Amino acid sequence: MRGREAQKYIVSKAVEVGERVRTTLGPLGYDKMMVDKMGEFQLTNDGASILKMGGDRDPVARIVAQAAKAQEARVFDGTTGTTITLAELLKLAMVLIEKGVQTNAVMNGYRHALGIAIETAKSNATEGDTPYEAAKKVAETAITGKSAEAYIEILSDICAKAAEAAKPDNIKLIGRPGNPKDAELVEGVVILKQNAYPTDKDTFKGKILLLDEELGPPQANVNLADPSKIAEVAKVQQQYMEERLSAIDEMGIATVLCQKGMDSRAIQHFRRKGILAVRNIRKSDMHRIAKATNGEVVADLADIMPEELGSGTCKIRGEDGPNPYIQAVGENVNVASIILPAPTEQTAAEFSRAMDDAIGVAYITAKNPLTVPGAGSIQARMAAAIRESEPMQSSRAELAKLAFADALMIIPRTLAETAAMDIIDTLFELSINPELGVDPLTESVRDMTHVVEPLELVVSCLNTATENAISLLRTDEIQKSRPIQETFADEMS
Ligand code: ADP
Ligand code: MG
Image 1 (cartoon, rainbow, N blue to C red):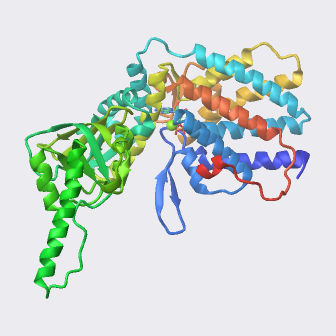
Image 2 (image 1 turned 90 degrees about the horizontal axis):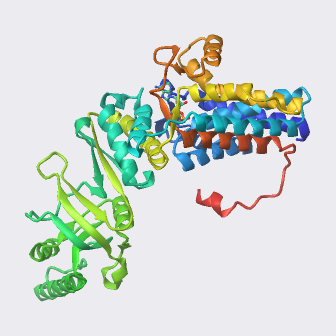
Image 3 (image 1 turned 180 degrees about the vertical axis):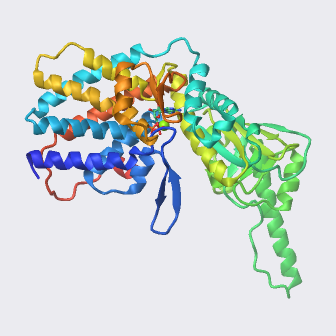
């Protein structure tokens, strides 16, 4: 395909992808049920996951999905907004191109409008909030309208504290049956296991051995008819265990965390030495502890290097409560866990999705505590500033600049659509009063300053949508080619 035909194809495909995620936007956004060939399913309303799991192999669809993914990687949220803004920018560009405006003029107008939009977002940002305050506000917005809202106070507080404690990738949510009021942020890694023997000591500071090997004697095939053989085997086993255990003693280890089992001899030994011993730990937890304590999971005790040991403090906690656990805190990497009790499995899954989003936005807000009004208000303000700005020299670029302003309004427009509000009235009211926002819950245009978004999220969304729109518009030829070497980065993702 060439020229106009190629451009048209690209735009129509991007618009189709935008349509696919559109209805998930905002507090009344629908969920999508993603079902695989085997009938496994997952509910989601995250734009990036929908596009990724949708598995559309079309190259344009993949570029749009990558744009959403880039947004997610940078600011952890705003993927639906990015996708539909990108699609709308392309759609309105195509209208101009069909009228004879050159692609270059469109790009100039868009870039100019982008600059004004970003300046406007910055000048509308609230200053003076502490990182905690700003993070809590955006977390509240992320939780509003979801089932977790009943516990918004405690959950947004936890998100804001977590934001200061660790990066979102290093925060693990642990769902438990129970009352959400007991939700708790814990520094380090939480392992829902207990010490292998009862003890009064509760803090174990020092070296941590992370073992992916059964701590027991090797199995022997003994012929029971030969008693002397049995004694011999027992002796060999005893010796084998003694060697392993004395190797642990020599390394001066405070805690042994084992992915597999431990036999009673090993447990007795650890009890005598006052070493914390936890067995049958999940693989993923082992790796998180390794990361936090700067150690490595070793598969064979025989050739362990001292530098493979982790270091930090392990504590036995919550023994009186319903959820006893071991807490492992390293000295190197900041890692945190959130224990999130929920009444049912279904609510646990919903809470955990709400918290995932909230933790992400809280984190970027804590780093840069500037927030802007959400609910379509910031888009209405940016659009107004673009429309009121001085006309550009080129009348065609000017048309594109104004189209950019219209494209921004896809956000309030879609919010209104999810609530079946009158679109023309809503957009008209917002263009007259851009300080207001769309409230899908009460189906009205009103003051929505309690709904806030991180400035960085809005800026990143605009940059990602515009840059991708421009690079797609510059493409005027789609050709069949020989196989293209996938890059290393593609394979990794
Ligand atoms: P995204 O993937 O883009 O983050 P979301 O489904 O999270 O999509 O929707 C985000 C949009 O919804 C933002 O424009 C935000 O301002 C708006 N929004 C969030 N909460 C509310 C609310 N309670 N009322 C109105 N708009 C809201
Ligand atoms: Mg969101």
